[in-house]
Image 1: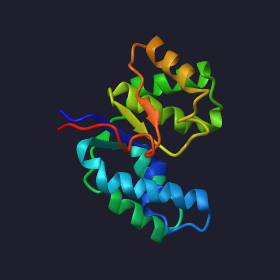
Image 2: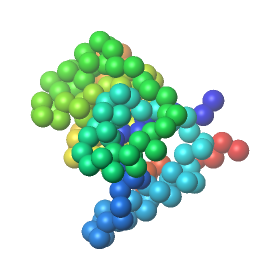
Image 3: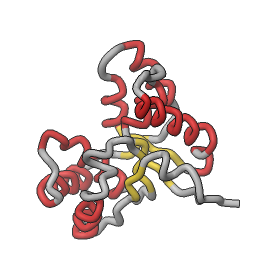
Image 4: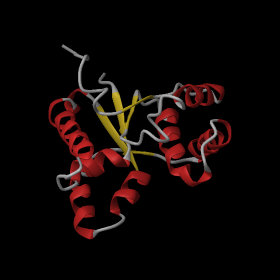
Length: 161
């Protein structure tokens, strides 16, 4: 059985974006493409309706490019257990209510037993200061927290051979 990865919206955004002139963003785009082309095959990938909705927003041409990367990826269900855990994360981490979607991404991965949540959102998801609180909040509700990481962190070191 392959390790599982939930792809948060920022990953699809970096994959589908036109090359950036900003050096850090361009580097993130390159790392994301490297992960996608060299590492994704060793994982089972998942998204959610939330990712589909976020990727469909905005510029039509960009949304079309994002949709190509989402084709055929299985969806994780957003049920009451997910929304309850997301609310718990907002209240106990605490996360600002304006980033409730970020809490929902974390809750989706935790509720469905996903190994890794892959993101470039280092403000509210893959944040070293928040990780211990996110982990405690998930465990308090009976869920194993996913590893919250960037493609750079998931690009090497694992081999299933």
